[in-house]
View 1: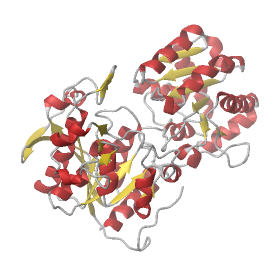
View 2 (view 1 turned 90 degrees about the vertical axis):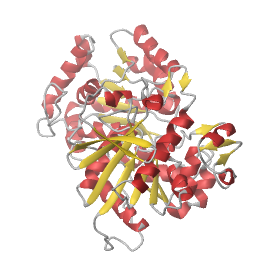
View 3 (view 1 turned 180 degrees about the vertical axis):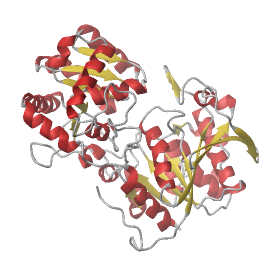
Length: 480
């Protein structure tokens, strides 16, 4: 993992830093993807290294359903609720008209049409809380396009609070019609090519890039990629103009949540010294999803993903029959685009007993898959960081990944480094390249002695938040 060095180097240390961490999804309150995992675990890691962290997010229907004892308060025109757990105080932005909905961002037929209002309101509430409450943040860490207007609202208020804008996936840009501009409370002078105008539309993501104090993304590889036309999704030129202010810090793993030695969702606890217990987890998984007992004799490949083209789900669908012929079975868990939901359900019905598909979000099943599968595949067309490959290492489940972004940063191919490798990697997002990688993994699996040796070694690798949280704190300090 690369080490971020702020201006002045590691010896420069300010001490306690007040951080307001702004995100639209945070585990365990609301989740659609990896952003929630990061927003749930990074603040905890920061609080352990002399940071006072408060997390601010919308008060969704899912949060309300948890029935927590919350304390209401107001700042200006905005209503909030607060809840303390451990060292972290969570601030929920209350507005039933915007957040009392079944989903976070969209319905099955598409995004909520008023998302520009929902998240401009969220961004204004963040700026209001930061400038009007008793808590005085040194830095606001904004995450993804839904918080991209925060730095601009602070500029309009003439408030000099430093902001770090973290891009988790540049493919999601918060693009809205030009007419939306007049409804989000921003003066006309900011609707320019140097401001938040983007090809005749309004871009919340661009606002975050242009007006934040610094920009980070979730791996060094993804930082390099988004500066290029191929992966920058049209924002590469804007990012290059801020090149010296862009940083890549790899996401970490919350091992209090993802560790087979203390995982309460799996049938047997195990570690690298008791790896034989992993077989009991495979039995439990196979039984849980009603796959035939014969599956225990075959390598079982796990997929936990948002079902979308970005994730290479189409490659898995196209290659499913050939993967079965290679001798493996597949279990899929996730939700996403209706097209891929249907395709994944379809291949399961076409290959009963060999493919098990679960179009839902199920945290307990996700843990069972990590523990019970032999391999885990991530054929992403781009992947800012990826977390499941890191979970898989800890669970002794060999990652098969495409060499992009954080997957390329964290996985070393066993073919090129037999003693230091920790997975199987392929270069091109094609069915044939992916099948070649799967075939190599299955060949390794046949040598049980060598397979166990590899798994024991990769389970000892440490991708905890400790190093990454330290890098975040140093970046916050450099802004001050």
